[in-house]
Length: 129
Image (cartoon, rainbow, N blue to C red; front, top):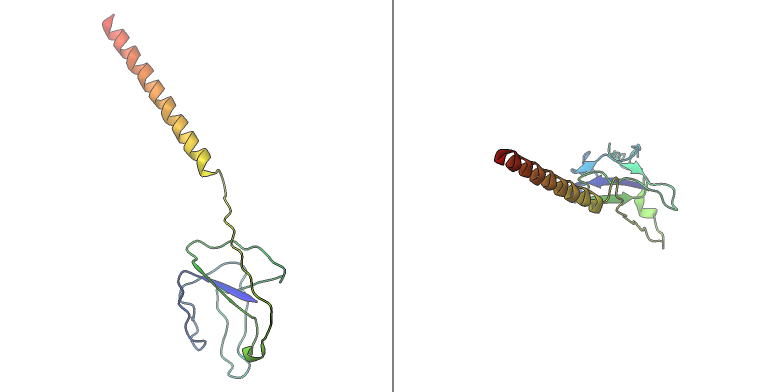
């Protein structure tokens, strides 16, 4: 199987060389060759191979909203299968969770306010002497 991520749902005719106008590069590219009878080019610079059939992980590129999936074949009319294709997208967090970042910002703001009031109080005490 092959896949290509895209920023939009546009899919042009197979006769168009750039038939996925919003294609986004992701993963190692694969040369898909040409169709069997009409010898039309099927290769997209941004497509990648989906292996193994038991599952794999790929990072979804930034701005990708669609994933086009197809069989890697030069003649599609003879392809039949009772099996379904299942795609699971899981959100992974990299770095600190948002809650930790918010807690650090709140603590920093509180410390800043404490230092501000201590400094202001010291200035008032030195003026009265």
